[in-house]
Amino acid sequence: MKLFQIIFFILVLTGCTERKSNPVKGDNNSTFYLDTTYHFTDTIQNKILLKKFFSTDSVQLLSFQYFNNNNNKWELMNEFDSIPIPYGFETDHADYNGDKIKDFVFLADRGGRGSNYFEHLFLYDSIKKSFKKILGFEEVCAPSYDTTEKMVVGTGLSGSYQDTRMYNIQKDSIIQIKGEVWEDGKLIKKYKVIDGKEIVTFGKNNSLNILPRPTLFHFF
Image 1: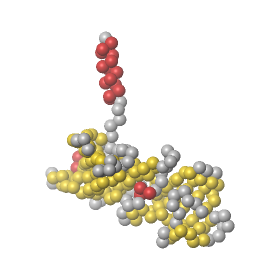
Image 2: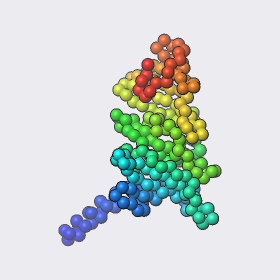
Image 3: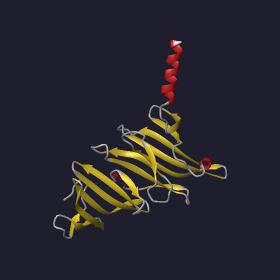
Image 4: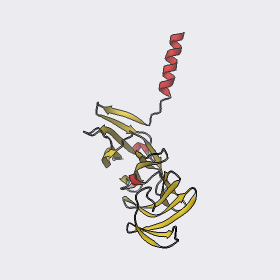
């Protein structure tokens, strides 16, 4: 009786383990996955194959392949190779362009605080039936999509400061258009970004200034 209880307990633990994708094949250096987390309108005609592997200097990387079934033949539509995933295979889905179709994201990095994180973004085009990797998206801190303003918002936290940056996706790149800096819940700076430079519209002196675009958490 005790042996049966032990076996049952092991089976319960195994069944509760979260699985986000199904391993297809692998070796000591790489693992292949047939992804089951992304839900297409017509799942039977689409599939995503992922490969997790390590570079020669032990950096964990990801390969992303998207296939579409055309006349009973699987056609490779997209292939993105050597995507850095230093914290392992962590994926999610969210709409980042307001087309009500969830897009594919992978964890790219984590900042000093748990709320500061960075992701790789793959937008799905239902008309062209293909994905595109958005260049520079992995530099957006804690990204989300503002459905009212129709833009991507990145929010970085450092001590009592909150650095909020707003972006537009243009073709295959993400471009910052404006930003705000808050300290202890009070707005201390607003600016626009034109040609890679800040045009301050609200600040300590409430005057217009043109400043070099700051790096994350460099406010003044």
